[in-house]
Image 1 (cartoon, protein in one colour):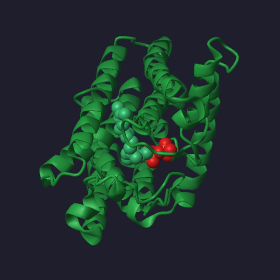
Image 2 (cartoon, helix red, strand yellow):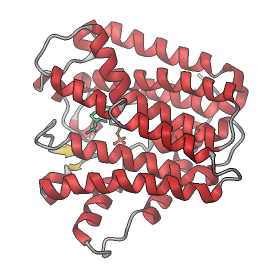
Image 3 (cartoon, helix red, strand yellow):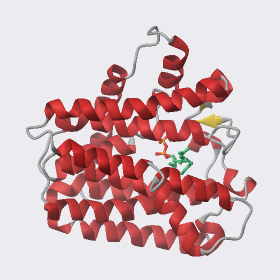
Image 4 (cartoon, protein in one colour):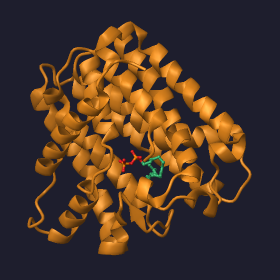
Length: 298
Ligand code: GRG
């Protein structure tokens, strides 16, 4: 473990992200009010804010400040929340609870939930565009947009979700399971770290280091998520536990057993930390976040 005070770091950055999100989302009374209410309902319901904090930590690891990357940090949370809203729909995972509240479609109906997700996905790219005003060289934005679009789209998160859904109830190979996890979850987590470092002017070597660390950390995150689905409770998770088994989802514990899954997650976290070595103490927040991913209970 590092000596870094993670609870304090997380509380501070979470509060800053929450304030920025509050201002970035259209107000509830802006027409059409229903969709804006639904967007705010899901985003402001809480959550760990892991992805925006990784954007900030990626920037800090190369000597940048959180102010310069905050619009993109908010964008990553909007993208993530859109994916949760759509994932919970009856056509996908059909879940009733998320972030400790009834899911969007339960409150607003399916049509508005779909549109709230669409609204968040597009707002994300508007926010990234806004980040250009804070950069000495706005050409960096082109790389950041490409990075995030690829991670969120059919070659990333959407692609992973497609294969996940097509694999339900089937016996799939360990390679396919790895593909699902790497694309559905790890891609956006990796893009969060890389975008932060890129916006803050990280060198090619620094970007390689955070890219490698982000991939390992993202995969570990999903493996821990699979383990928590077996071991956690609704109160801890804010969503219904045991849902993977009910939906006959391919999971790490199913494929490799609980103990081997724990060992693999731990190894990935060690590998993520090793990849960060060239960045020195500036990457301590990312190292501590990596430990947090392993130890989290929600
Ligand atoms: C619908 C295009 C589309 C994609 C959905 C992310 C995703 C892909 C589905 C979510 C299903 C799921 C539970 C995946 C496990 C990993 C994950 C993303 C968990 C939720 O993220 P947390 O734990 O949530 O960071 P909070 O609420 O803390 O932000």
